[in-house]
Image 1 (tube, rainbow, N blue to C red):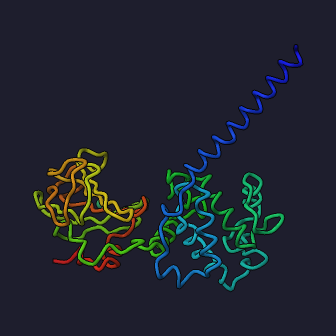
Image 2: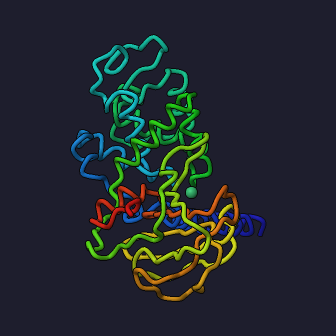
Image 3: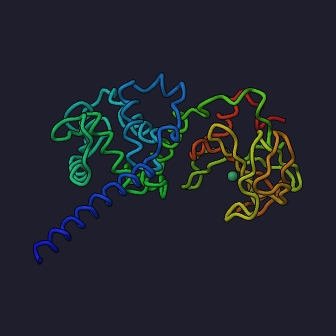
Length: 319
Ligand SMILES: [Zn+2]
């Protein structure tokens, strides 16, 4: 009797383990960033990054949900020009700071990362910081552990990699150049200037944080136009932005319009390119009336000026 119960318990336990395994597999499948949800390399990236490195950056990045491959590629560029830098500590040995390999790991840091994370097959056994495969996966896990996961603190994660604000700025700027503005061009006539004014602050690091959009200064009440055909996914108050509108467009593109004085559209509404959707204001964290115009591609902000150039759109800062 006792034996039977034990057997039944063991069977139940085995089922629970099986169910948990299946479930965690399903959850992992949901959590893992699908391939179509990451950005595509720009022409510059394809020309500048050796093909084997580009493949490794793109394969490794999804192991950290929220981390775009372009951040890894930018670090590889800044550290050793993707292993091509002719200097001590790239192919063998160490530089004056003790760093080695294409991603310039200190030996203790690399050993700590690989002791905590299993490097997928394809590299050296045991993993080596001089092998691009191992170094790039280790960099992915290292960034993930230090804030890159789910984009919680990407700036902080990059800062941990090399403790300097100039370094973070350089990496973020390089990463922006490596990301294509759009996977599929949406057509030359599709994009219009959202507000006419003076560009006062561009996309990029600003005051130790990332400015994810383009600021266009214009008097309060200046019309804000939908930048392209789309659907309103937010229209109302938002922290920092005062009053904002967000539009969803085809191909994973979302545009954001912030600090608005008034909004003329409601969530769920379809809008056409050029349609007036609100008015420029000075609400939220703003030091003068302007439009904060932001473009996100697959949830990664891109430089609106680059995006418009690649879409053959009009000059955002023109008259
Ligand atoms: Zn802004």
